[in-house]
Image (cartoon, rainbow, N blue to C red; front, side, top):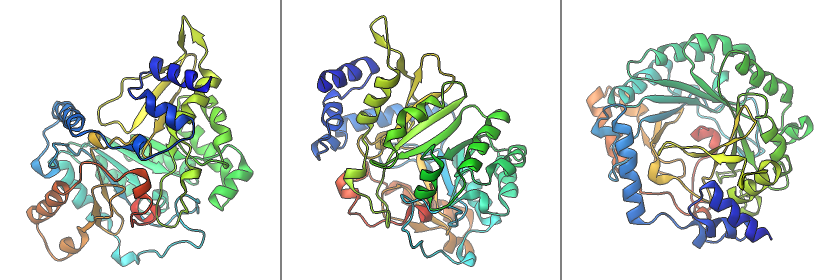
Length: 394
């Protein structure tokens, strides 16, 4: 019965690989089911992405990799510090933080961001650590939002201090936000984050809605045996509020004790959501796939009668490397072209050594050209040396 239901879900909701859904949904995760996209499919998709992006703005060669992907989205980590200790982000003993003197200053962040924006980046997301713990975040937002060519300034935050700071951040040009929340149960929140504060996060979500952010994105990292029993409770948040709940597959990083058994694959989560909300209307379920942009990392869905929406970020079981348009600037000034790739190059060091803009552009462009077609398979990622998530930036 489960196989038939999964096949029905795949057919009517627009999934192209129903065999993958059946295998993962039934709990069988193999290297075959997570094989990378074929070379022909990758080329076709990259071309589609390129055509879509060049309609929006002119991108310099600095942001185009050897596979034709245009990188118009920059994630900037403002700090390695955080006021939570989430289990999937760092080891229980914490991590060694980079000395403040080795972190990018406000002026260095703005200068480097300006180089990217002048080359064609049109979206910047501020991350951490927890970006709101940085004392000059309002000034950073003000300067970044004034960069000519930037269309969207976003932030990913744990929401602990956001309710108090959001009105000012909005005035400084913050366009959109993602709030991380992995449980709706206060006691479980304290267990998962090793800190109190569930009520403050919920208040931040409500404050964002009151200030007109639409949608307010809520990121939920699912871990088997910890919060996978709350899937439908999270979806219910979208019933009466403009919330986009985003279920994220648990990803391996240094120190977070990743195990494939903790992974709750997308197909399984989708089956659960459909079982709760997929009532039949004229032979079709009431949950429908949205038309996603080629560079979108999430699979987005609407549910009939719900004000908000539901999304799935399938980094582990169905990667979206062919449409990747993301680059990362870490708090210590290292430049990273792939979340799961260990390769990094410092922009801080040449910047502080007096490099001019052209020299920095050459370093950035060379790093982008070295970006691989796709990251390693799921089981190989777990074995690859990489920094803790708090060092990389969420």
